[in-house]
Length: 196
Image 1 (cartoon, rainbow, N blue to C red):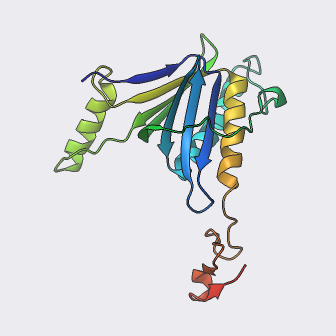
Image 2 (cartoon, rainbow, N blue to C red):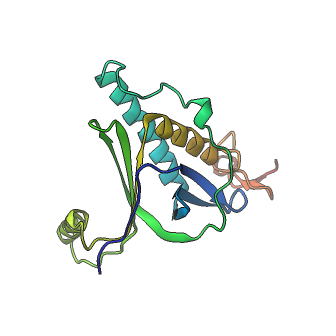
Image 3 (tube, rainbow, N blue to C red):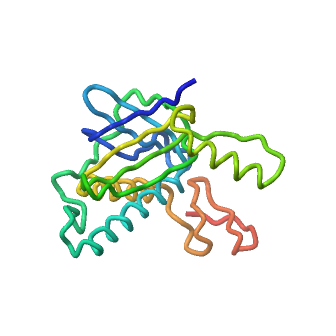
Protein backbone atom coordinates (compact mmCIF):
# COMPACT_ATOMS: atom_id res chain seq x y z
CA UNK A 1 0.00 0.00 0.00
CA UNK A 2 1.40 3.40 -0.92
CA UNK A 3 2.08 6.09 1.65
CA UNK A 4 -0.63 8.67 2.21
CA UNK A 5 0.81 12.19 2.44
CA UNK A 6 -1.44 15.01 3.60
CA UNK A 7 0.32 17.99 1.96
CA UNK A 8 -0.50 21.61 2.76
CA UNK A 9 1.64 24.02 0.74
CA UNK A 10 0.73 26.49 2.15
CA UNK A 11 -2.10 25.86 4.58
CA UNK A 12 -4.80 28.44 5.17
CA UNK A 13 -4.57 27.41 8.82
CA UNK A 14 -2.17 25.24 10.83
CA UNK A 15 -2.72 25.08 14.58
CA UNK A 16 -2.32 22.99 17.70
CA UNK A 17 -5.44 22.51 19.77
CA UNK A 18 -7.17 20.24 22.24
CA UNK A 19 -10.42 18.40 22.79
CA UNK A 20 -11.55 17.73 26.35
CA UNK A 21 -11.10 19.19 29.80
CA UNK A 22 -7.72 19.94 31.43
CA UNK A 23 -6.29 16.72 32.77
CA UNK A 24 -8.11 14.70 30.14
CA UNK A 25 -7.28 16.65 27.00
CA UNK A 26 -6.34 15.10 23.66
CA UNK A 27 -3.89 17.20 21.67
CA UNK A 28 -4.13 17.66 17.90
CA UNK A 29 -2.31 19.29 15.03
CA UNK A 30 -4.80 20.52 12.45
CA UNK A 31 -4.09 21.80 8.94
CA UNK A 32 -6.69 23.14 6.54
CA UNK A 33 -6.85 24.60 3.04
CA UNK A 34 -9.36 24.71 0.20
CA UNK A 35 -12.08 22.93 2.18
CA UNK A 36 -9.79 20.08 3.32
CA UNK A 37 -9.06 19.53 7.02
CA UNK A 38 -6.53 17.07 8.43
CA UNK A 39 -6.27 16.40 12.17
CA UNK A 40 -3.61 14.21 13.77
CA UNK A 41 -3.35 13.43 17.48
CA UNK A 42 -0.18 13.56 19.55
CA UNK A 43 1.09 13.87 23.10
CA UNK A 44 1.25 17.15 25.02
CA UNK A 45 5.03 16.82 25.27
CA UNK A 46 5.25 16.44 21.47
CA UNK A 47 3.30 19.67 20.96
CA UNK A 48 5.56 21.49 23.42
CA UNK A 49 8.75 20.11 21.86
CA UNK A 50 7.56 20.96 18.34
CA UNK A 51 6.76 24.57 19.30
CA UNK A 52 10.09 25.04 21.08
CA UNK A 53 12.07 23.54 18.18
CA UNK A 54 10.24 25.70 15.62
CA UNK A 55 11.17 28.84 17.57
CA UNK A 56 14.78 27.64 17.92
CA UNK A 57 15.05 26.85 14.20
CA UNK A 58 13.57 30.21 13.21
CA UNK A 59 15.98 32.00 15.56
CA UNK A 60 18.86 30.10 13.95
CA UNK A 61 17.66 31.04 10.46
CA UNK A 62 17.56 34.72 11.46
CA UNK A 63 21.03 34.46 13.02
CA UNK A 64 22.60 32.72 10.01
CA UNK A 65 21.08 35.12 7.47
CA UNK A 66 22.03 38.19 9.47
CA UNK A 67 18.36 39.10 9.83
CA UNK A 68 17.70 39.00 6.07
CA UNK A 69 15.29 36.03 6.16
CA UNK A 70 11.55 36.84 6.16
CA UNK A 71 11.17 35.60 9.73
CA UNK A 72 9.67 37.86 12.40
CA UNK A 73 11.27 37.94 15.85
CA UNK A 74 7.86 37.32 17.45
CA UNK A 75 4.51 36.09 16.17
CA UNK A 76 2.79 38.91 14.24
CA UNK A 77 -0.58 39.91 15.67
CA UNK A 78 -2.27 39.80 12.24
CA UNK A 79 -1.77 36.01 12.00
CA UNK A 80 -2.63 35.30 15.66
CA UNK A 81 -5.26 32.50 15.75
CA UNK A 82 -7.25 31.78 18.92
CA UNK A 83 -10.21 30.03 17.27
CA UNK A 84 -11.02 26.45 18.32
CA UNK A 85 -10.16 23.48 16.12
CA UNK A 86 -12.39 23.05 13.08
CA UNK A 87 -15.15 20.57 13.89
CA UNK A 88 -15.62 17.72 13.56
CA UNK A 89 -12.14 16.71 14.73
CA UNK A 90 -11.50 13.34 13.10
CA UNK A 91 -8.10 11.81 13.80
CA UNK A 92 -6.29 10.63 10.66
CA UNK A 93 -3.51 9.01 12.71
CA UNK A 94 -1.50 9.26 15.93
CA UNK A 95 1.87 10.98 15.50
CA UNK A 96 5.01 9.00 16.24
CA UNK A 97 7.86 10.86 14.53
CA UNK A 98 8.18 14.55 13.71
CA UNK A 99 10.72 16.43 11.62
CA UNK A 100 11.50 20.09 10.93
CA UNK A 101 13.48 21.71 8.13
CA UNK A 102 14.02 25.15 6.64
CA UNK A 103 13.78 25.46 2.85
CA UNK A 104 16.18 28.32 2.14
CA UNK A 105 15.19 28.57 -1.53
CA UNK A 106 11.48 29.07 -0.83
CA UNK A 107 11.98 30.63 2.63
CA UNK A 108 9.59 28.10 4.18
CA UNK A 109 9.49 26.01 7.35
CA UNK A 110 8.66 22.37 6.63
CA UNK A 111 6.88 20.45 9.40
CA UNK A 112 6.38 16.71 9.01
CA UNK A 113 4.39 14.49 11.36
CA UNK A 114 4.53 10.77 10.63
CA UNK A 115 2.16 8.13 11.99
CA UNK A 116 3.18 6.01 14.95
CA UNK A 117 4.33 2.58 13.80
CA UNK A 118 5.00 -0.38 16.04
CA UNK A 119 7.99 -2.42 14.91
CA UNK A 120 8.48 -6.01 15.98
CA UNK A 121 12.20 -6.73 16.21
CA UNK A 122 14.48 -8.83 18.37
CA UNK A 123 17.52 -6.58 18.94
CA UNK A 124 18.35 -2.89 19.16
CA UNK A 125 20.35 -3.26 15.97
CA UNK A 126 17.30 -4.65 14.14
CA UNK A 127 15.22 -1.78 15.52
CA UNK A 128 17.66 0.86 14.26
CA UNK A 129 17.76 -0.78 10.83
CA UNK A 130 13.95 -1.03 10.63
CA UNK A 131 13.51 2.61 11.68
CA UNK A 132 16.04 3.81 9.08
CA UNK A 133 14.40 1.73 6.34
CA UNK A 134 10.97 3.11 7.26
CA UNK A 135 12.16 6.73 7.23
CA UNK A 136 13.81 6.31 3.82
CA UNK A 137 10.77 4.66 2.18
CA UNK A 138 8.92 7.54 0.52
CA UNK A 139 6.48 5.27 -1.32
CA UNK A 140 5.41 2.69 1.27
CA UNK A 141 5.93 4.34 4.64
CA UNK A 142 3.30 5.25 7.22
CA UNK A 143 0.90 8.17 6.65
CA UNK A 144 2.42 11.64 6.96
CA UNK A 145 1.23 15.21 7.41
CA UNK A 146 3.57 17.67 5.63
CA UNK A 147 3.02 21.42 6.04
CA UNK A 148 5.05 24.25 4.49
CA UNK A 149 4.80 27.51 6.46
CA UNK A 150 6.06 31.06 6.04
CA UNK A 151 8.21 32.41 8.86
CA UNK A 152 5.25 34.39 10.23
CA UNK A 153 2.94 31.35 10.11
CA UNK A 154 5.56 29.23 11.90
CA UNK A 155 6.02 31.84 14.67
CA UNK A 156 2.24 32.09 15.11
CA UNK A 157 1.93 28.29 15.27
CA UNK A 158 4.66 28.05 17.93
CA UNK A 159 3.10 30.78 20.08
CA UNK A 160 -0.36 29.24 19.96
CA UNK A 161 1.00 25.73 20.61
CA UNK A 162 2.82 26.89 23.75
CA UNK A 163 -0.30 28.77 24.89
CA UNK A 164 -2.38 25.59 24.43
CA UNK A 165 0.13 23.50 26.40
CA UNK A 166 0.24 26.05 29.23
CA UNK A 167 -3.57 26.34 29.42
CA UNK A 168 -3.84 23.03 31.27
CA UNK A 169 -3.81 22.31 34.97
CA UNK A 170 -1.53 24.55 37.03
CA UNK A 171 1.62 22.92 38.44
CA UNK A 172 2.09 22.16 42.13
CA UNK A 173 4.47 24.77 43.62
CA UNK A 174 6.41 22.03 45.41
CA UNK A 175 6.76 19.15 42.94
CA UNK A 176 5.68 20.73 39.61
CA UNK A 177 3.24 17.89 38.89
CA UNK A 178 -0.21 19.02 37.66
CA UNK A 179 -2.78 19.89 40.31
CA UNK A 180 -6.10 18.05 40.02
CA UNK A 181 -9.41 19.72 40.93
CA UNK A 182 -10.04 16.88 43.42
CA UNK A 183 -6.72 17.53 45.17
CA UNK A 184 -3.13 16.46 44.69
CA UNK A 185 -1.00 13.78 46.30
CA UNK A 186 2.34 15.54 46.38
CA UNK A 187 5.45 13.35 46.57
CA UNK A 188 7.28 16.17 48.37
CA UNK A 189 4.63 16.09 51.11
CA UNK A 190 5.19 12.33 51.70
CA UNK A 191 1.97 11.53 49.87
CA UNK A 192 -0.34 13.74 51.88
CA UNK A 193 -3.20 15.14 49.84
CA UNK A 194 -2.77 18.79 49.11
CA UNK A 195 -5.87 20.94 48.64
CA UNK A 196 -6.11 23.72 46.10
